[in-house]
Length: 110
Length: 115
View 1 (spheres, rainbow over the protein chains, first blue to last red):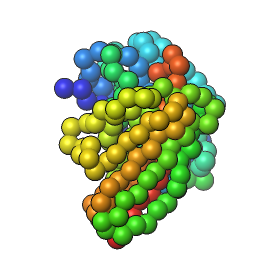
View 2: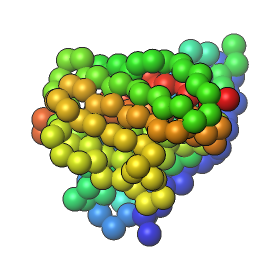
View 3: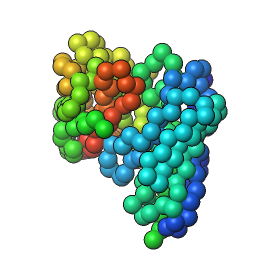
View 4: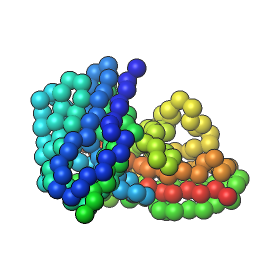
């Protein structure tokens, strides 16, 4: 059974305190792993797609990495505006839909 | 990134009435659109997948006669919640995929409250 697990469920950081969010997955065949950011009451905002183990992508203070079992979203020197829920989703080979994890709710304190 | 809009952003309706939600891809042609539902503090749950000009494919447990989906063009999909009940109150989000990309771009969501 395909499964996506995100940890921690919630994370509080001081401004400037770097950390990582984890997304572990078990799927029959991975077409892609996606990271999204979701603010309260809004739709998810696309961040990254990773397709193969060893791949890395960066955008401002965010860096996403992928292995055969998990993905990490590294946040370097976060700012309060980085506070949001970060969602990980997988797309299985042969399918178009995404299967989402439950998200990590990040709060960055000034 | 690609832009997807939804209308309305919020709607309140009485139990037993029907509500239509529109999802538009503004700067790309969405060959496939998806409809999700999200309950408070939970993740997105896929309801159905629709391809332009075809019947929608519904996920297990989603009533196709209650949640009517029409994908009439490459830029517009609609979700109609028929005979809405309070338990249908939720945040409904659509997304679109276009061309050869696997990336889904999401709309801002519609908050439905059934009284």
